[in-house]
Length: 125
Image (cartoon, rainbow, N blue to C red; front, side, top):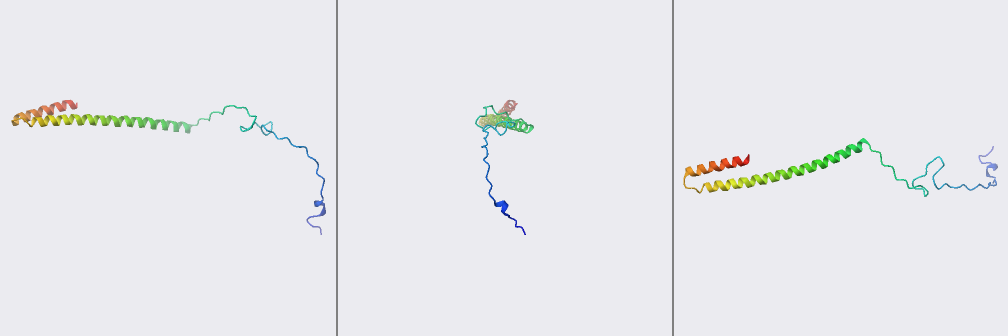
């Protein structure tokens, strides 16, 4: 019966000297272009990334968000200014109506209030 390991496999053979293989520093084989991290690689500028429709949509969405934020800021400031003007007008109307109540007769008070009301309606338009 022959064993799995026979004497032939354990005999030492003299190793043939191998020629040292030269390592390529600037890329693998002549068919492959040099890698970007190789020492001898020329300093070519990196290519611009390709623009896809997704990046265009994201850009448009961001731009629309910025425009919307500025529009909301303008609208809010416009409403605040309008409300302040309304408060000033109403304060002036109340002051004029209070002066009317200082008059002596009811007819004079009613005439003054109608005048104040007409002026405030005209100013509101």
